[in-house]
Image (cartoon, rainbow over all chains, first blue to last red; front, side, top):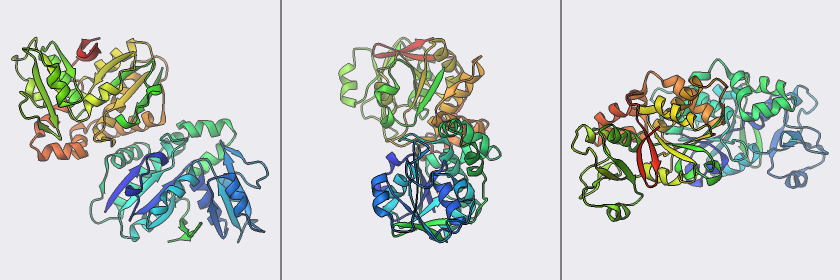
Length: 237
Length: 237
């Protein structure tokens, strides 16, 4: 199996995604929030690139969630915090989610055979699910405003570590994947510190989202693997 | 001091280079060869992007060196091996060097205030020289055919490690720099193995350049810091 890692949404060329299983990562915070929402029993999450599109998608009963530059969107019920789903209030509801980078990355992955959402919180389950598809895998790091994001790279390395652990054959990876695996091996026991040291982590800390960062750093705290079906992320396997 | 790392030549936007000290890295093999050539006493190395331009630059007595896809260019005296300079035959000569990725990266860095060539072999000396300029630093990884190259990332991390060690204040780095520092810390004692596992390393091994790889992996084996002056790389400080 071949595993390639794309460093930012910007670098996502269609030919690197086509015919593969794509794992989209936005650790801080979209994909971590998506995992938390499904763990809380929502029916599904519909990612949307723009606020206008999000509003157009809303049907009665849907919950609007999202952020721009870390802050909740005016008029929306929820922001982009996994902690927003520490409640059963949204059970069975559809969530319309628009975020700065993560939803754009999901859109970019649309040409893949299957699209999963990966985070530190569901890494082992996500790697196992991706391997079961039996195709080559492309890991798409959302990044932040077209720049590489440390926390997404850490998660890419973690996913490759888990793919390797579960594979009988050696994993063939590209140089960027090998670098992220090295980064993960160097930081495996310091996930929170690594997230706090990242550009997005620093910004979120300043905005008062320190709890989100701690929650997003809880490696393998969930076994939920969000999978895109049509236009909605649901619990898949 | 701020240190940023650019992952490939392709990503090198002018605004990230302007007003900074640039360290250009092409571990396999251009910048390693340039260090070896200056150690062997050549007068200087003139990097050239194309074979045609290289031929046009040649004056009587100049030595033509270069490769395309790892192989020596037809009619040129030398390829792109540091081992080519295990001789005093080229002492005082000008070398015209054209390579697939490294010389392009040097051209891309032209807007910087000062341009140094970095490799694993001169990392400590190069970091110290860059710090002496007192400006922010941008590390430009040449990469290979517009893709990130593991060996260049390893060298970027090593340079940041050395910059940190010599700095009284903490280094402010971008997320990609932090990732490369993590990669270096994970691989510090396995430089040869890391180079051999890289895409370019595997290709060079197949072409019979295993000795080059071992030589390029000798961390801090030189104190020579190539610096671009006009159109020529000379021994600078």
